[in-house]
Image (cartoon, rainbow, N blue to C red):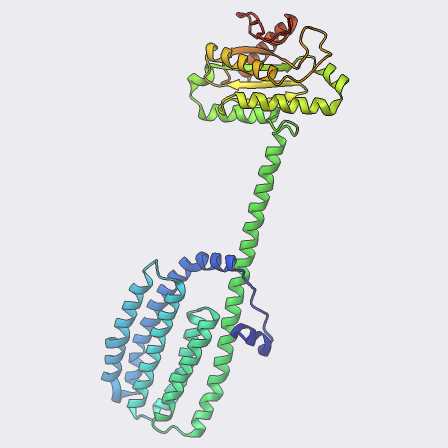
Length: 407
């Protein structure tokens, strides 16, 4: 049975919160920096107090003053300095640093016991009750992990009670009185160490759960934003997605590219007749195939969106007329190449085709972009009036003849 489980069982304490392997690793990483800083500060504070107690030795145990000064300043002080340097190495695990700190604390306990044994003064008996201080140091003051606190407590008790019988005037009755004070201190400081560890873990788990919840909420929010900006049928951006992308372009593109852009308004020819004749299921499949064909044909830098119904929009930042014309024809041809049967067009074509209106201009402002889209839309209507299955530049260009029209 583990130390924590034993304490839970025999002392009725709340169980230590369980950490998974991943949580335990995160817990160690998260509190390492704070623990290193705390250990370093405690080492300096406890070392200073320990050295100051040389004055107490001088008052209570005048016969061992030089022994006390020699051991405290000649042994423990160098050990404390080495420990501070040891703690300053970031690559060392916090557990290793805790073990080193506890070891120096127990070395201080050992030196203190030696001083009292060699004093031969009856006052050492009263002074030896201060042994409980070392018990509190290795549990409450240093706050190591619970298993280290338990092992250090046992080691500290062994050190103290290995020397108690050598004190001048120590009797079985004295040892019993000493145990009457030390045993409750031993138990209660371990209870405190258990509570400290439990609180640390609970605080970590609460923070960890909050962070996990925040990440999940952020992920779901991102997913909702994407869904709200995406057409569920074609998986292309919708009008909202287009607004977002235009905003992004204005933020990252150069002014020259924004002012020399182009848009393509794309409309599937006779789509209502296709829906009415073949059903909405076939209409949905047609929309998906057309969207996929156009997306494959366009570079990734070009924004392609479904505006609604059978209408699509392509935004070409930094695109001159020649490139725009090439891409418009590629889109028209890509859709025609799908060869989706449509026997109800009412014209010479017997398959799905698209009409495209093109316009070059600025997308730098909302007003400029709206005007550009309106101009391209006018060109689109001109293509439809001229027989569909073609593309036209706004005002300045005529419809290009379709190479695959039925004879």
